[in-house]
Figure (tube, rainbow, N blue to C red):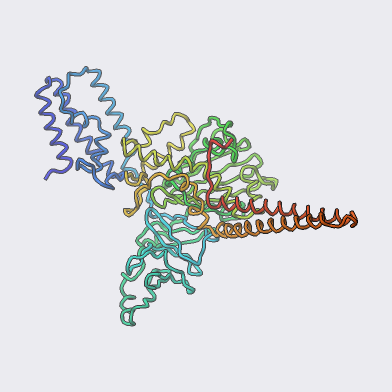
Length: 600
């Protein structure tokens, strides 16, 4: 039985023998050298592609596997050798050009060294919930690296396990949280404690129940460590659930920072939502300051203010031991906001992008953006802004005014504002991910060849993409370099605008503040519309009485009635206006379309 590599060598040698019979000795020698180099290059590509994750997913039509398809796409020599048509003798200049092209291809592949230490994606903490914005009375269905989880609160702590009952594999997220904090499967009533151990099987005798408790197969699978820090619920990425995993979790800090844990900064409150695009496209987006005045025109900046700047890598601020994080400063710092004296983006894998701007008054604004890779084509964003006062105690610009507004307006209103901001990017990023996946499926082209990045403002984007090349995987199935678990679903198809701008399923139904606001706004809309109609009818009645009054009645009484009727009509109009505002706000909590063409 021939291995794929031996098959490539056999086919290549056979093609060489046929070509040598019709070609000149000089050309045959040249092509024989090319054939001998092809298996060696194919071997290198096979090893690299295995390390990059090309082996995942279905094989190619020629039976050589996905690595073979990748090698065939990338290896020009192999494509040439497989041609059985008669060729003419080429000039030495053409051969030199082909050799140069092959060397460039190899250099491009070698830009990602498989020997480098790779980031451990699973031995990490990932934020999945905001504690005070999540309904603790029912289990929550979540995803992490393609694995479906169930999370529940027992009245004291959060817990997480794989979303499957050990009995008949029903989803535990369709279950109930009982009064004693246990998680009950709604299929047959099995109940589990926070450690995943079965506590009760209603259909079991006492002997059967005792045997079940002694058998580990009765426990929930993949119980994970969970912790809550500064109102954010973090879940450990490893699925083993053994003592070693819990020990590693206890010795690994979550990616937070001092301003969140001390009183030096004012946090505006958290927001969470599910994004209709993958983790790496969000992180690439927030590694890019140049898009802010253009994409967020009218909210942050003006598209006419876009200007060139450069990124300066700040290696001293990165972890020298692990060398996994990236930090870049904007030069000049006022390129995005004029009052900035320093501006930086700090990527702390696997989930944090810390965007910091130091103001001329000594204060600073921090944008803490946590993004968790949930499943292909989706990610979960948890974010907040932190504002540190100026030296004189006043609030700086940037997010400073937002910090003041957040303390006096309802939470749901700030979340509506966040939706507008996110949708300005979301309309791009979802389709960008789909386009990149199509480029790879159809042409085998990754970002290196698909994207044209000629300016210095793209430097941090390039650094992030190279980081993903080094520490990620690659699969046609999921369209991402995030190393999802094997059960992860494939990349979903493109969404319609109705799906893309669906706020209810991506945010409102999972946020206690916004779901409560949606219900209250619905009640307010009905109440004020009814009040408006009643006041209008009452005003009309008063006017009718005034018009039908005796002509001998006092003029002052007539005018009083008319004035009272007019006041009722004014309040009727005001009630209708409030009802309309309530209806519009509620609509924004369910569906919030956005068009850049209309953003003038």
